[in-house]
Image (cartoon, rainbow, N blue to C red):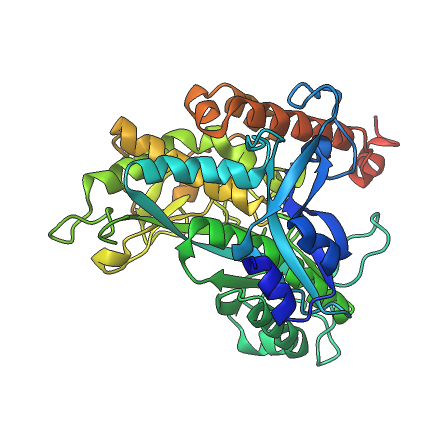
Length: 444
């Protein structure tokens, strides 16, 4: 009996949610009876699922997929099977990998893109260790998209009106919700380290305990769904938009990363004397060189670029510094074995598989190319010029034009991702905003 079948039997599961993360990190798939799922521990879906945009449309450019719109095989990863703690019936969820009938992996799958990068590390005897930090806002239910979002009412009966960074009382306002989130996470083996109140009104942050890159991407993917489901139970929304509130800071997904030797477990970012190693410096240099070209994977939506503004708690360049939170790349103070780099560029709206893959890819290229970083910054990186693309359109053009990144991610993935994101950008461009009506209607 397989691991998945054993899990279904041990937990008396009656339904299975067979899911994949799409380009936007949305969970797509099928719900089916456990008996039917156990027959082959997988399912079939059209390959075009990876060209579906966040608005539900499909781009005109479908050259990245087979012209016959073939089906692909989705095979469950037994390491990812978990209960669905909010379901009414005993339900399990399984994340799937995607393959063609001849056994080849589907190159557009975000999970496969991360696996491609991890295979590059494995070939050199390296193993990445990552720890994502996810920020999100709690907001009142918003059933009319023309109205701005508002902070929800807490236990006191009042919404937050000011910023309450690190406030315990502000977190306690939503204790019943967080009790559910913690319970749901424990049931799914999602390893939450800490929960804090961030700078924005009703903005929170959770830290996941460091570990294997694929496992942590799975956990971040599932946590987003978990937070949204728990919030709905308390008549709130949990949103991972990068910039949901115009007057509040944006929400980020910071990624802590280090690399260990696969055989010894030693952190290759530190030398035998405990000092920063040449590979550590090359990794930083790779991030500095290639992060701008991979920005569309860290800031995948039009809204993402509203977060990247000077003096607003988000990086505007790829400077690095020791424990410097104004820099895009922060090196926290730590013991040699825990030496790591915090990539602060990504928004909370990023697909965790693609953001982690992109960060590791940039560092990998730096190490194999033997690059040298700039000197660490000691002042405010906000005072220095922007060095990141400022629009989604510019970011996509930079990704397509960066041959080393295209080779790492795969040409078909880059083509498919670009087609999806360009369609979303064009759809957004057709919307007439309230700002245009307010300032242009009678003045121009």
